[in-house]
Length: 178
Image (tube, rainbow, N blue to C red; front, side, top):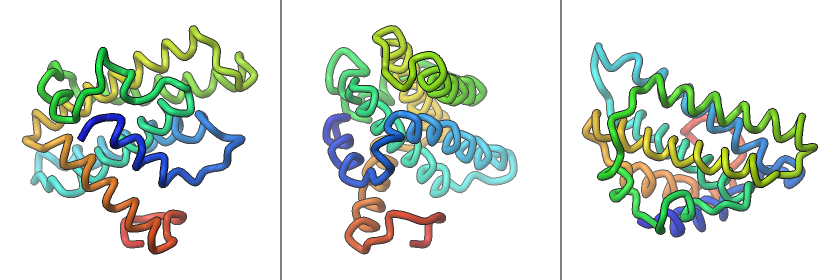
């Protein structure tokens, strides 16, 4: 699945307030990466790939929507519209701690967008968001490589889950069992 294809599905399930574009998905990146890293904390005991893959998929959704809200487009994060398998293939080794710093940067960029830019995206801020989102995708690809997971599977499963929730009218709410 190409980044542009995923973005179309992700946008079809985005129901947050339009006066909160960019802030909501940017903060969501921080929250979801935190949940993902919390699941990795148990890796030393026993790895269950299903919850990790679900969290990776959730991060992908927030990256797609942040990129669209920043008027970048997920497919523009790299030189061409790559597939998730392509991203995983080129991902350099990146530590989970570095992924946490990328999550913090996403939140920091949202904060400065509100405080310094009066919620109008400057080109300088857009360039920083683009670099950060690309780094997050590469970090997720690296993590999947380390754990023997497929970034493509995480994206496909995530879209299927969200489109099912949309059809059933249960996009809003919390938890996996909706």
